[in-house]
Length: 305
Image 1: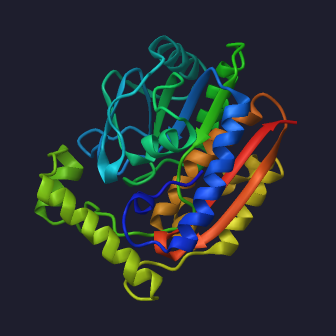
Image 2: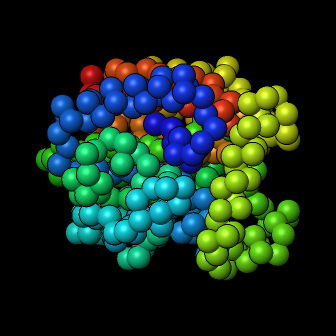
């Protein structure tokens, strides 16, 4: 499922929010009916928990805390520590290199889906899995699928109802600082993790809102959304053809759908984890290009076929 900090901020139209919130309510009902005993969530980070001083491609959290950005929950998550540790060991045994964090900080990319899908964020134990989708250089996307497959293989041994979530936008290219373009204060943050002051955090929030406003009017420097690319990607998922992403090149992804489209890595990992247990079928199929959110916004639910 997609996430967006702008869902919690002024700006998006009431019609858009009503449409998306109705679909999110359907997804929440799906989760309630499934009644999971464990949640594994694949998500990116937006320089709130992971920084260039040490940027792993993948990391499994054995403990985690929400940072509370964009009005999301701030505080400890209910992490299934023993399962997280065992999962990391199983992934390493499957020849996929993964780091662990006993103090992972997670932002809206992790917290927003949990707040949306559950009545309480601590309702079900969770294993958070970070996938670097922002800080270049990025590894090949086939390694992301390998990670998902390894985690899915481990989950299949648990004998539990496990909800797997992939949290990320599809085509989108919002303003994100880079090593080459960041001013000194932003460089301190993305490299060394220097915390933002309340004023800096508010300034970033205002900048995101302004960028979304301009983008919705067809102005600004953000790259256009690509609904054709988004729908082609979703079709891969709907038709159990996830292995085809192995041939994708990172430069091609960015050129087609924007630099932040690499967040589809979380979707790839989630569906690869499902596919490790056999064929699946998607149920809820929602997609909408949403300029107000600077993103293609999608939701998929799926169960074993």
